[in-house]
Amino acid sequence: MRILITGGRIVNEGHVFPGTLSIVDDRIESIMEGEHTSRGIYDKEIDATGCFVLPGIIDDHVHFREPGLTTKADIESESRAAAFGGVTSYFEMPNTNPQTTSLEALEDKFALAGEKSHVNYSFFFGATNHNTHLFEKLDRRRIPGIKLFMGSSTGGMLVDKEQALVGIFEEAKRLDLPLMTHCEDTATITANMAEARKKDDDPSILLHSQIRSEQACYTSTELAVQLARRYGTRLHVAHLTTARELEFFGVDSNITAEAVIAHLMFSDADYQTLGTLIKCNPAVKTAADRDALRRALTDGRITIVGTDHAPHLLVDKKGGCRKAASGMPMVQFSLVSMLQLVDEGVLDIARLVALMCHHPAQLFEISERGYLREGYKADVAIVRPNVDWTVTEDIIQSKCGWSPLLGHHFHWRVEQTLCNGRLIFDGGKFDADARGEALTFRS
View (tube, rainbow, N blue to C red):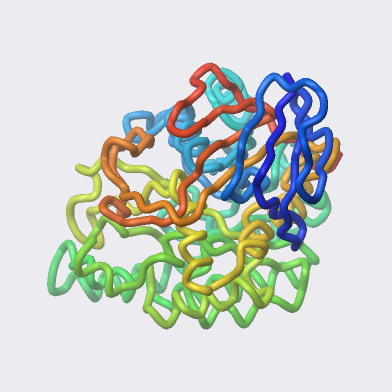
């Protein structure tokens, strides 16, 4: 299959330029700067006039709920949502049922994804208090790294024993595997919740950011950074939420941070209108925190933007701080949300591509993806500016069927998504037969 993409502005490695991109089978054949007339015979020509041509988005943080939680979501539905949003690769988290904390569970997930995933995939291996001995049996070429939950909302995966934490940081360093951490201090959260429940057994969602507080995040992140510095571990702190935590990042390239769409789009003021729809852990914090995270997108303190895509049924989102489920579906709208921040002057489109494509590929050492380069896998997202549309229920692809962005107006639209050279999404039409590939690392 030969595909030619013409007329668009290519965004890659800090440059934005008019150009033509040719694809042969699953790889990029050539990238030509300037306006070029088509030469040769192509099976399909895509006219990208007025559009921007980006590398496919790599989401380093999703929960697709399979196996065991498939009433909420599954690999097929959520990878379809990803394709609709220009996301061509994802790393999925281990807190499924069963948890991805054994070699057998990991292999089962790869088998499921091979059958069902429409885009490219890999899976974090989950750390527990007792499974560090398994790390050396992992194939470093197949997984992005180890996921460590240092917070309490993890379905029983909390690692809270000092000896276990030390062992995890030491072993991740020995094997040169990135360690991604969820950082919230359980003792702080437990005390805050107990105090809030003196007045209401299920405290109002308006208290969520006070219960899962700045101090809870800072205390846990500080500990993770201290351990990483002590043992030389490659640490990547997930879903940063507070301005205060930013002091730990931007100095040591071995210690990096992720921001996710929810914490860049919302603040605690939005609880008044959206309520538990934006309940997530760590909690959405103040507007000042949100704005500090936005500034950190361009100064080196935030390295990657992901989603923490975490679908629940709407019935699960009922209640307050204690009873309502935490998490929201965001993967379909992550790219257009970030492009909205481009329009607002928070960052430019080249920086967006660095945060969502180049940096995930660099940090996790993904083979032949994350860039538009000759010989690389042809993962491409084509987006059009100045198009007004609204998020409605009928366009939501996630199995849960809702979004906190319902009714939101966007001015960018994903026009096409190509994954491994296959046009998987084309102006609303979806290739349901397409299957992604297992990502490879460090090869």
